[in-house]
Image 1 (cartoon, rainbow, N blue to C red):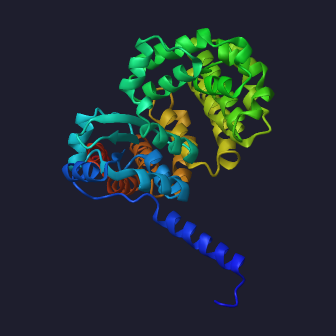
Image 2 (image 1 turned 45 degrees about the vertical axis):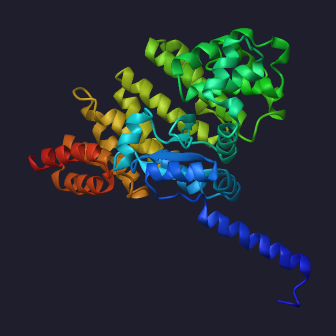
Image 3 (image 1 turned 90 degrees about the vertical axis):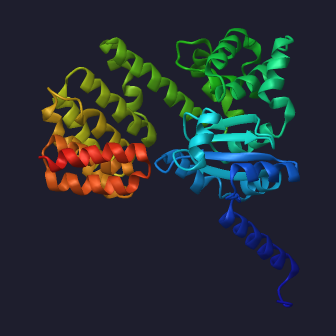
Length: 395
């Protein structure tokens, strides 16, 4: 070791340290909630609770892609007492009820007395998750503090956007109210700014609303403020909402004019999203031959390696009941391919089992259903799969 140059040795040590943190990630205590509160009081820290379920795909994604990162682990291990509870087992059942946890993952930040200080949730980037931790540790960003400031008349746009973010995970009705206030009052001359981008990213819905219309006309101007991929993601989201709206409203001519935005996109991810939208259009309009052609092409092309989208379309189309028997073969093929790609996912196995029930493929259906049962992990879903197994056994 003494012959290794100092800079190289230092680099090696830093790399090893970073790797060790990344491997370990956030350190989650396995204490009871009572013991967690006692520890929080002793160390003068908030408790961070990851509320998850075993079947929650975004929960698993956060586990594998965010909780393990060195920067995330360093922040959460330093400033919080970290814990996690399955919301369908043990103490998690009571905590879910006490803190009104209705979606997964939900992130709770609780003080030593059990008072909820801050909450957030959903799959997010490391940067977003770090920001959540920073907000939770900032007394000025608590729900109570921000409500008090709002009641006293504070209305600057930075504050309103911060308040909107907090409300999103606490009071959706109030969040909608604040969001409408931001959309209506955000100064036009300030939209082309970092703060304007924050407002657009959070509140632009379609090209028909004020912020959405501005964004669609000035996309390039926001590239100075957006992270890589955010502009394209927002544009895709807005056009997706627009086209699904056309489908619901029966505006077939408008749909036909705009679907090419997805079909002809140079972005493969956008073209894949277009398959979902177009498949829904064909189903809603009973155009089953067009649906089959689209899905057969996607099965060997755009979606051949996309288990989530294959399984989603198979579920959506395969369980519609009378009048759709002609789409069942391609749905079955998509479901089988999804299982090949993700054999250890509950959703892919259960989708295949359901289609096998509809198509009276008993042995294959039972195999998929039993695999789904093993993957279910919760009493509620286990009950659903047990019923499915019983139906398959009755064929």
